[in-house]
Image (cartoon, rainbow, N blue to C red):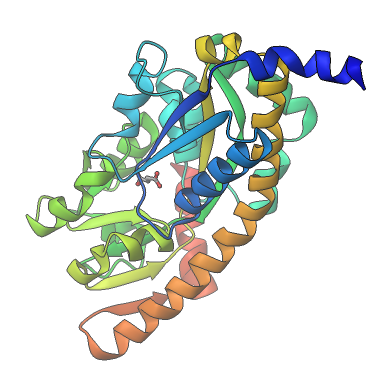
Length: 301
Ligand code: SIN
């Protein structure tokens, strides 16, 4: 008993640890709910010795925050979309390839134990400790133009990520790709800087961008998931117990997050269907043949 107490002693001698964790999504999205739950579990398991402060919807982009994660004392954790890590790990740009994954199981299979080791190393070599991945599901298209085939992208002004693959895809379809941060999405549509964007149902619903669009085209365009990372210099200062508290809280949260993602996307799609009944907003479900056209076109791109 005394031995266990002695082992725990260094942990209890530590001052309270605060982890700042900004989240660019709105309330009631899978990522925000997961971040808040993670914070609650860290506080509970550490008996109040470790505090995760979640800042929701900051007016700052994940890419900017990622750039300063290792040099700033203000942020210790982030959960940007996986494709935003492509600046550091170029191969992660493949998350921008349209129709790459048929379903979520294919994505999860990518993070199998043998691949995962290499992925962890890629993150570590760039100063990030990857705790794991949280899903937000597949993206859909919203537009003021009816897009039923790849050639309908022509002349649309589409919000894209800062990605060679995304930009090339849009250029090859004679569309105009425009990159800006997530927090600017509503304003960019309001000001008609863009007329088309690609996102998950929970992001489309919670940002209210559907109120500025005529069509929601159900395409399952690409996978959107988050790489949840801790700044490595901060991580290296934590002791073994503190690290295991974070890992335990993260594992518990991840299990729940996958369920919340499905539930949020389903319930928000239902709300959008209700909205469509009384507004000039149409939800388009493509036939298998129409969808095949997009998939084939992407393979040839
Ligand atoms: C996010 O879900 O964190 C943002 C997605 C986006 O930038 O479109």
